[in-house]
Image 1 (cartoon, protein in one colour):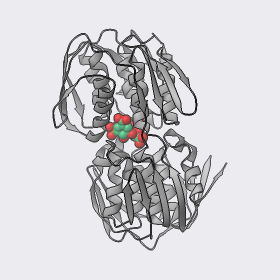
Image 2 (cartoon, rainbow, N blue to C red):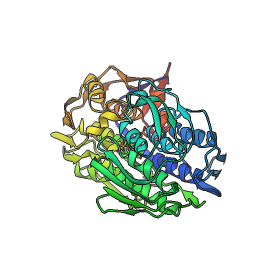
Image 3 (tube, rainbow, N blue to C red):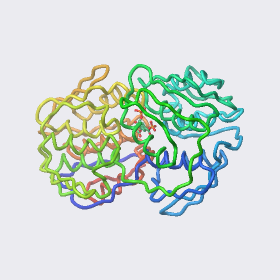
Length: 430
Ligand SMILES: O=C(O)C1=C[C@@H](OP(=O)(O)O)[C@@H](O)[C@H](O)C1
Ligand SMILES: C=C(OP(=O)(O)O)C(=O)O
């Protein structure tokens, strides 16, 4: 399905932020790794959430759900042997479940998105798991992949953090269950470091004890721990809401988004400060962000690694800012659902944006007068590219057509419903 985005000058209204993708995947996982029955309130309903549900079910968790909650009876440290798993296009789900698969004799991971997740590298996690005695057959670090484990060894473990934090998070979920204590050392750099804070928060809620160095480069993990069954409440999602807030920022608007905790550990919380720094009129109080956009934005310079899944939306806002903006420290955007630097900028240029790239930087020469639009966008299976180009379309001279925009459902199936409820002119077409 394609989406036609017709220029829209005004957005008005209130929405409830959708539930956080990253907390939903983590709560599902720790519930599966517990032996009792856990409840997750307000889980995210999205393809990635569904992928995690499917995998833990296939691995033996009992999952019952209604509209507002999921009740899960976990398998503890004994997942059920299963031949094959399909993680859809969900990177975090694949990387986290690879460590669970390491507890089993043989699990095959299929490659259902060859043009997206199928291109993403997992070498750093593969190397770490291999050092723990797990054998892995893979295609140059990519899917499809077969993991042959059983009894992974703890002890001293090294993992590179220069491509993705998900490799470290994955090992943090696995090591408490091992017979030995573990010491994890992160090599090189740790990208998306803030997301590891979410992993540690969830592990603590699940009763797991981990000693982390302040810089999150060293961890001591006692073995033989048990995940506790708990009740978890999922907070609102900043990465998805970043796109709504950016849409409000580039239009004349009066938009309220509820369920966005000021003290959230989601790095993308920073998008509120980014928009403030761009002089967008907004307030953030009592979990409510209120944008009163006047369409005027000022360029700025930002460390994008602090809000990795919000960068594309902020770049889209910067397309209309006065001056040149710089988003630096963003190289690992190249290893996401598409190359979120080269592929994304190609599509932005088609729409009329003036953008440049470096290996680890996005530079935006703002056009407060607006862009031409009138083009067809290839979103490269990437939900965040779909959301970001929609923002650009709202302030184009002519409509843009986003091909295969249904892939937005990876994280935010009701994105266009939310935008429509705010007055955006967005229409599905075949
Ligand atoms: O741990 C997680 O749940 C995630 C970590 C981040 O990935 P990287 O660590 O690969 O940057 C983020 O982009 C992704 O959406 C979810
Ligand atoms: C990169 C993302 O997800 P994942 O790595 O889990 O596929 C994302 O949600 O933007």
